Image: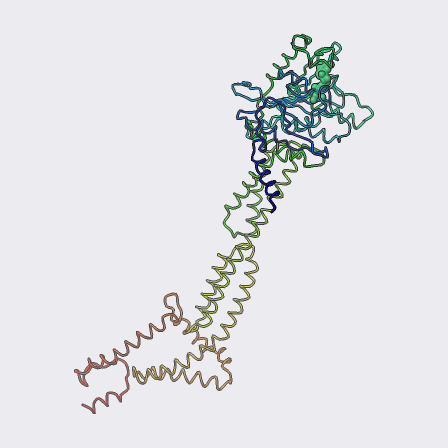
Length: 607
Ligand SMILES: Nc1nc2c(ncn2[C@@H]2O[C@H](COP(=O)(O)OP(=O)(O)O)[C@@H](O)[C@H]2O)c(=O)[nH]1
Ligand SMILES: [Mg+2]
């Protein structure tokens, strides 16, 4: 980096850190812009200086905004209300080139005690309408913003009320219709501005200003069904309904010499004007209330945040619409209601059946929509917010459905694997038992029915049926075969036991019979399968089943232990049984079993 560029950087940083770089305002006794037009002069943007002036306020804030046609004396009137000369206050038309652009605020609020609440009242000046070269939408935006921000909206009219003025107020009407009447002491209340018709000149022609307003607001006959007249009539109706929310007031001419007004002191102005102006101040004071948004008054920072929100909504669409404002106000309520839905859904322990989830979703959704209905802003324009809530709820529900599906398949898969393992275990039983297999099969089925719930159940049920069916047919196929082998082995073992160990001839004979039956039968009929249809085989199977598996004894499990105990008993019987018999000699107590005669003979000989 070159030396000179380093210097430039340094100066740049110093400039930004200096007080003027961070907008330190020393004197708040001046007018500041808060809203400016963007270069295209269609949308609005915030102006930092004015916001600084508002931010520092800690009291509840109220605002008085003056709207009306361009050069209708708005700035002059505001100066009069603030007891400021044209040279100190808002720039008055004829003396300065720059006319008010956007919305301006007088930096020092007027402190008022409103029902015991110390309130800071800001005065807002607006750019007038009916000026050339700008889109109407721009005027509407400024108008809408002033309507929303203020607690008292002074509609400054140099002449009588015209149709154009009434239709211009359609936004205020819409707003009032949307937000008015929802002020039920809930934390969602939003009070629309009080409208003050201010007729500046003596156009009353003998009527009182109230009469004039009433007349202006009376429906005009529309026999031709002109759409425009119809629309204005509707606004008239609505404005008339808002009756108690609007006041009418008239001000006479301050002085005949229009251009010299700024140089005249109070004493030089028309005294009836001065008197009426003071009355107007009192009227404003009597109707003004701190701005209440969602149940609470706003301090400086909150007021600025509110302003930002409104501006964003008004700049959003092509035209400033009540709908977009309603959306802004409903945003928080919407979030709350969505949370309500979410909370009641997260209470559900997943997985559950699809029908149950659906019905919980429906009741939670209804509850959430009901709560929104009780709290929301907007009588006619809340539809969009309701749609958004419905969409969000549906989106959230989809996530729950997916989570349910995932949990369900996780659980069913685990249970399926468990059953599959169990079935595999039952396949390789040491002592094949149909009863044990069936019991395991049943248990598996039952626990699957109990554990596997949710949307994956059907598909896993099908897999289970298939797997279990396969496993069962495999088991049956193997069962007879293994039992046959087992019985052959068993008969041979019994032959040995009967002959050499317990030496019980009946056992040996029985074992031989069994062995011969098994072997000859299969040899005679060439296949062991034919044996399995034989009733004798069925008898054998029944006996085997009773022996091998019963609710009391599972031989497959205890076979080794039982075999071990029997062996011990046999060995004991063989050794100790003989010794005991020894002293009695040949005449000792005889065994109850028909033993082999040879063993006693051998003993005789040795004796
Ligand atoms: N005759 C008359 N002139 C006024 C009145 N109020 C303001 N003026 C003059 O009208 C011109 C425009 O006033 P200004 O306050 O700048 O109007 P704004 O554009 O609505 O803010 C100035 O020359 C004022 O002196 C009034 O009540 N009567
Ligand atoms: Mg002005």
